[in-house]
Length: 455
Ligand code: NGQ
Ligand code: ZN
Image (tube, rainbow, N blue to C red; front, top):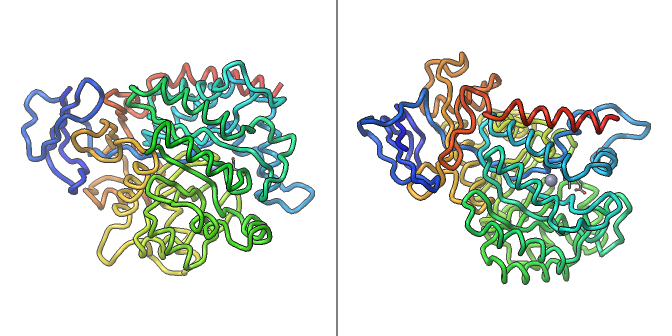
């Protein structure tokens, strides 16, 4: 297949008259700028690489908005978590798949072409493993396959309820595995999907609350025997209480604890490293691991504000995720990353250098960090990478007359009416004129699922 764009964002910058040649395996075979259209299909507007969404708990899409009324006590992350636990206690595998498919349709229409699924809902409501240990993992992969989004699935190791190996509570029993059993699950998925260019399997120790040092060592050692370069994600230092509890237990802060014991490298992604000191910020940047930020969820849960400016100045890498899916929009994540900094510093244009486009900078930065964290050849319109691209509608009022990085500034700061027109993932069109091809059918199963959950 050959495509032609009048304007496209390539790794070397914006280029005009770009011809893309797509190989049968869904990767880009050739990308040529200042080319002739020849017989190539002309795209309807400017082209961007699709955005990776590096952090998702798919099932939470169906509870978005259900925890927005004050309860009898002060509400917090921890009271939200109780609501979330109550919600997930009833989900069955078919419902998990239907919710994930709905979410992935929404992600694709919003311009996310790959997702990092931090998957921990492994067992039945009583905590018994399904006959197939990977039952729910496969359901989520099926939802990704059906909708077409690329996926890095990160089966979660969750073993304990708090720091120091405290016992998990009854609401957490659906999550629990030991390293050996989780590794069996990972190995089975990884061997099934070895030749699927749309899927990568990694691991996710849930948080330092949910695994001990010995668990983490066993997990990483086992993973080395399955896939030595697989991504490793974990939640870290999201809440102040979590930091205080970590200090009480170990004398160290979470990021400090991790960096002093493990060789954190570029295949790691530390999600919501909200509460970090200046020194932790600098040391984390030096590891070249990705800081996974989910600004709309972090705002919704009252987490706090990651020191993104200091982190970027120290050479840090970051990417975005929609996490709880209170919002499914790369525009909103990128915008709130900057806005939180503006509101605390009471200043403007903070996350980039003099003269540089902020929208352009944020979009490129999240492409690179997201691709690194998901461990797949994505985020770049270059030969050998997946053909994951977005065609913007040039007739949307907010983008009218804007070009190149000016277009990205308008997109990130004023793109409230979604201007994503067509979306290709792995060489296949999944969204056309703003609609996912299976939108209606996927929505019907989602409607049934919500109805049965309400009953
Ligand atoms: C999660 N979500 O695993 O879904 C977590 C909350 C926890 C976010 N951190 C539960 N946003 O961290 O214990
Ligand atoms: Zn999370």
